[in-house]
Image (cartoon, rainbow over the protein chains, first blue to last red):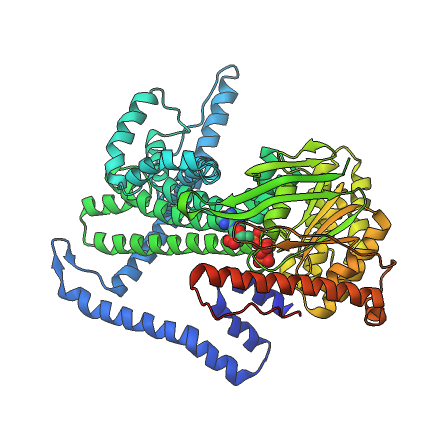
Length: 340
Length: 281
Ligand SMILES: Nc1ncnc2c1ncn2[C@@H]1O[C@H](COP(=O)(O)OP(=O)(O)OP(=O)(O)O)[C@@H](O)[C@H]1O
Ligand SMILES: [Mg+2]
């Protein structure tokens, strides 16, 4: 049982917690404590030094919006944001109750009439912004993957296609999201003329910008992975005379999966970075907009709130990366020594 | 008409000045149900020859006929056992065999396919390892999975490329016995490639040496093996026929080697005093 938990933790990259579990199980105490010190202990010290330096240096810098906030001010804002969130939730619930009562009353008065529920129009909370950003990044990432993986597989299988597309890939790959944004905005505005309430224009623009930047790492890695599949596996497919789709799903994709996931991991990372920039510049909802709003707001708490956003962005990026690493390790299981 | 026929087959790699001719004027006839062993030094083009018969490579010149029809592409009628097993590492033993069976016999009912797969896993004694992946298996076990996968395809001819050369002597001995037994049961046509004389004598109806030459390897004179089956390796040393064959084949290869050495010397540096010495003589 213990070994199972430890195995899962190792795959997920949480080696740090392994000694804790062993310690709880009472396995050779001294050694585990030493291990614990070498991982968690040292990381704790680093964190302490960082917080100390930050607290020391930050107040020295004066800006138009007051001092650069130290750890204490940021902690305050975390609490204030969470308080705001709780208030908003309460308001929202209250609104829902009154609105329901209103609608029911109207219906009772006027049975034939169609009565619509009004939507709550309060300000989005910090948590709402996080949620919007996550939905947007996953949409963009999914769009990018849907194009990148099939195209990458074809490129990897077909040298001609690869050399045909290579110049385009090389030119578009280094383009920054900021450059794409105006064009995407104009094109989406031109094409998406009848906006639906459930699909906001800003959301589409952000998602497409994300995909335009996230597509390349997945595409390149998939093509590379497919092109470097062990020739023996392809020979197996040839001897069995597998038809194209079977060959792709039974041989090519599984063989290239570790490469594909390396690409997807980079893509998701790029997508997350790009998204924040896109939201900030285009005022699309999400964490980027939160940062921009606070900057415009210019109150004495703004800088501290922006810092909260920065840590949140970093933390979410880290979690997304861990998820991708875990998936990557999981699909790479069994690959390796068995090839030869 | 021979079952498998190679006529004047040549194959080389590369272009222009860098071109190397690997096989030159290969002629070979294999009868149905025959066990032919091709014996050759490392790097002489054994894998190239098997790939040509399998249809994985196309010959530059000449013709390869299977039952009178030219071979143009690979197909499941020619089961290849690859030199390095070519197992798919993400599939279990069962999965590797099932990939071939489920595709080739997709019109069979599921239960029949499952039994077929299990039968061949059983045949190579891997039933306890059915759900293991190749990375968890020893070299000999991987080799057996590869054998099971190929046999389960029910090919008309088996092409084995040094199936046992990566194994230790002990495992090798056991698997040689198993290959002979399986062949006795099925009487499939087999072309097996090896660099081990004893293995060749143990398994073959006919041994054909692959003779390396500067302009590409070709096949030497065949040695018929008329030892009764099943053959027992342990009693070989006392068997006159076995010893005669072994000496003859060894001498052939040693002469080949010394001739080659002279040729190479003559090509590069001229040393007039050097006399060719036949090691076998
Ligand atoms: N695809 C290729 N391109 C260029 N040269 C090749 C190719 N395949 C084989 N050769 C060359 O042909 C020669 C014979 O190769 P082959 O793999 O057939 O030898 P082999 O007898 O199977 O060797 P081994 O005993 O090591 O398995 C080698 O010199 C090799 O360099
Ligand atoms: Mg070889």
